[in-house]
Image 1: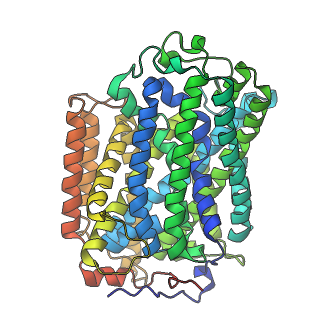
Image 2: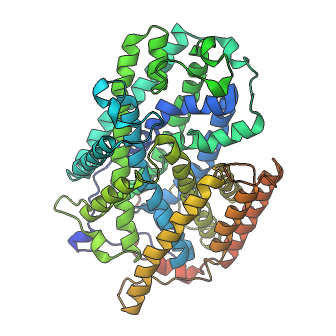
Image 3: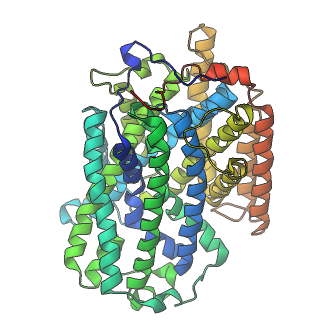
Length: 545
């Protein structure tokens, strides 16, 4: 049977300090969830789906809850740094582990840049910042320089150490939660027109509008972030107790806030702002939707608060994801997919090499995705692809180790797990073909980088060289290519052929995902191989030390 006592290497470069409690973990996830998504999500969603955007938020919340439930059990069972990058490695070995590790790193590295773009977008309210972005939201040369400087600031703060970072983030998150709640209360009391919800029809763009808003208009993107508590697991004081609580608590807080924000945004809009239809929604200050709306209805003081929050909220989220990106790099190195030097930490136990890589990757993201909305769909599909590895690992571990003690045991997990995998596939599909082909190119780049190092490590006989275990991961190329083909033939995104009718495409994605799920469980590693993969898990006993 698998031992969870674990051990920690005595080498300084492997040492992460366990200094983060429940509040720090909870606020890491909540702080990641409440970022630029709340500043732009309600406006983008209502333009895509009309008042039926409420359904988009409801579907998105259900999808995230299903994935969070699976992660809660895994996070309590294996509280390791960069956990989401490592669970598939335990269950399927090197090839699948390397792939999902790359998906995980890819999304974490691209979140900080999008938060910087949100900061610059709202900052256009001040004349001195108006030259940072063009009218279409893309960065100018001066905007690129400022964006890079902000990323550098995130990295610099991370060098102060995780304990200081956790306290700073907790303080910032109290503010980040308070301002959306204040906005909900003030707009709901000051200006609310119930008739707005039926003007031009509740769902003027039909089911396609509701579903596309989930991936392309920031709904799922806004709700992402619950996994941050898992990424910090290697630095948690009581990980097996606190991680499930932090994961589920953050999803509940975030879902309620975002749904209510959408309600008050629709209700507070003047009828003239959508007189030509929801798709043509427009009013002064639309570059900052909530702040512009507050000014329009005579709440200048609230607009000022929101412009300040537009700096603090995205900055806090970008800071947390910079932290997570460095921990994921650390985890990839621990699993042998990247050079051992990337585990290097300084005297404060900060993985400095991972932080430098996070900075370089973040700057590079501004080149192909120079605006907020262009990056949203890409990040959404990358994140959900990362999340998809957890239900698979969950299913394998439940099947191989049914009696293993779990701090949190998900009720009906054998049903929820495949359902969560199906939901992940649907969210990926709704991102659209124009997003998924770019994601495919990024995946190929990851295989080139990590695969080349894995080959080099094995050729040189390095002690941490990963075993690829292609047999256990044989389903993964079929899944990636299959999802790409369905997307190309489907209904969503520029360039899609639309040969598959609406609902038929959803049915096909669901059946295909279930087939992949049970295929993956059938060919997963045997018990002995899984035990070997997790033999070095760095966890504490249930009570912590």
